[in-house]
Image (cartoon, rainbow, N blue to C red):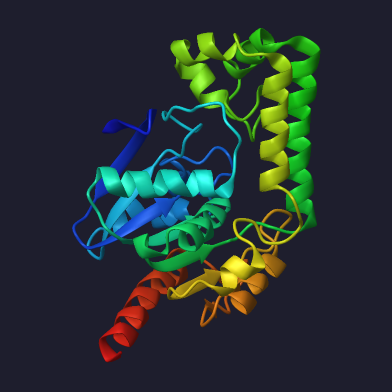
Length: 288
C-alpha cells in the first residue's frame, strides 16, 4: 500500500478503480483508517473499495493520527482535518472529487465543502455525528487524556500509547496514539514538549471540535452556503444522532435525507443509495 509525505506528515493511502473520483473519509472517530471501510458497520459486508470500483476511482487513506499515517502536535479543528483530504487530492493531481464521509468522516466532509468548495463535486454523508452525547463523549475522552498526562507526564503517555489500539479505544493514551506507537522519531520529539503548553493545545482542540451539541464539522451558516448535491443517511445511536442528520437536511440547500433508518440499511440498500445519488446528480447536471 503506498504512502507519501504530505505537508510534512506521512499519509498511508489506497487508490482503486477508474471511475468518478471519490475521496473516502473513514468512520471510526479518531481511529479513522482504510480498514474501517471493511471492518465497521455496513461497510463490513459492502466492502466499497472492492464493490464500487467500476463506478468510482476510490481514494481512501488513514487520516492523520490514525492507522499507519503520521501526525503532528497542533490544535485540532475540522478545517485542519479537511485540509488533509484536499492535500491528498493535490498529491494525486485530482482537481475535484465526490466526497463520502462516515461517522466523524461526515464532519470532515462538510468542513471540506465549507472551506474548499471547489474541490467537491458532491457529498455522501453516512451516519453524521452530533448531539449532546457525542459532545460529552468527545469532551470526556480529551479530558481523560489531559488528566492522565498531567498526573503521569508525557513519557508515560508514550508507554500507554504503545500498548493501546487507538485513542477511541483508550482515551488516556491520547489523540496521537497511532504515531506514538509506530514512529520512534515522533515519540522522541513528543516527550520533549513543555507539558503545560501541550495540555493547552489539547484543550484548544477539544473545545474546537466538541464545542456544542450541534452536528459536527461546520457552522449553521457554513452549511447553508453549501451548494453541492448532498445525500444523507442517518444513524440512530449515542454518537450518530438522528437529529444530526435532520440538521444537515434542514440547512444544506437541496440536500436529500434517505428515509431508511439503520434497521433497513444493509449491503444492497447502502450500495443503491450511493449509486442513485451519483446518477441523480449527474442527471441534474446534464439538464442544467
